[in-house]
Image (cartoon, rainbow, N blue to C red):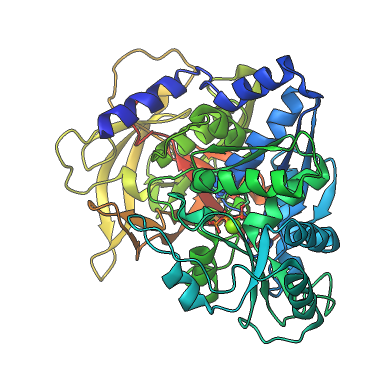
Length: 558
Ligand code: ATP
Ligand code: MG
């Protein structure tokens, strides 16, 4: 099983556009002129949290499908629950859709259709297709039966139309308490599909709604409201996730029985995105925000679009990812390494390189003149020569990365250690001669010597060294803070997830002088280390804080 999944990912990375069965359906509908030449989709978030990478999948699918066919895609807030609406969520949703590069045709609110939905319910009652039921929630569940046994009919199922109309009107007027009565579709208590066993389509909730205020104390259920929302808007293809496959007969039933729309929209299901090391439920993400596990919805470790953006992902990389994973009809787990691969591929061509050392160790080049400073020319992007080069100061006192020195080297360690000579990238060959310690035994500095003959670009070919490391000039070094991230969630063998207690670690470092001007949101490759972004919230004139976006090497095997 796991092997098959890996193979699939491999294919997608090869750039083969995953076949999109949804487009095949639309092609057929266009050919048969089911909706004429019209294609209309929608992205219907419930404004109860920030969007996550799973939503990005749905956004890309809905908007790009509309684009592909010259059609339209609406942004529709599915706000049929009178829960406290938060404008913060609405704002974030719109910012996220725009950031991904999409424009909605219309911005709509499902709650604007409450009057029409009520009329639809009345239509069903008049047709003898809906009834007011006095059973409470527990009784309804009990009467519904099980997958093996048919349900029992409610004793209120055969109320006549007049009585139902009156009771439903009284429900609307507020005569009854929450849960005292519901309106149910009259379908089939013996249906093998549990969703068809007289589902509740309206419930009483004495709660104010952000849009309609106190006008309503009855609210439509999702399965009744959603098809009507789609139909009112002229949606042709209503794309949703696989959990709704069993609800499709009900979707079709509502539209058929209300009978106002011809042809009715078509519901199509695709597999929701699941990612390794990633939790993708707004409820869970909200809990982490509320209990302070993370620094907010846009914490760079969060799988929210806001978090991914702050982490340094580009919209191009996210869209590329959504395209590569394709649209499947069966649930699967996508390796988060593929998402990382996409951002690496995107940034590789775009960003400039800078020298930055983390957990720095000081190096004194004892044979280098005290007051000399040279400008070393370093290329900005090895793969894109057009990005040019820059001058970086070099002098007697430098810093190297903590990972590039070992007092007692392990096997195959070719970087700096006592007695070893390495290349300082773009500068000279340097030999480490002495480790100078502080009183507490920690390293104070390394005393090294350089060989003037070996200057980079001089054509020196006298001898070779195995290690090349980078460096930062001490006098002009810019102190930086670096935030390194690990996955927020750890996957266990049984398919569960636990919170990673060590998902954030901060370190200090020094950067070459140019980074003093880094603007919030600016991305770089830190030479030999990875891709980083100046954090948009924490970076100031005085302090540069970088998020590590992704390392240079893929942990994920093609
Ligand atoms: P969550 O379960 O995370 O709270 P949701 O499905 O309740 O998500 P909605 O706001 O109702 O969130 O979703 C808006 C749209 O995004 C729906 O059409 C839904 O199917 C889609 N969507 C949500 N999660 C995913 C996912 N992981 N993969 C693909 N599409 C998704
Ligand atoms: Mg939902």
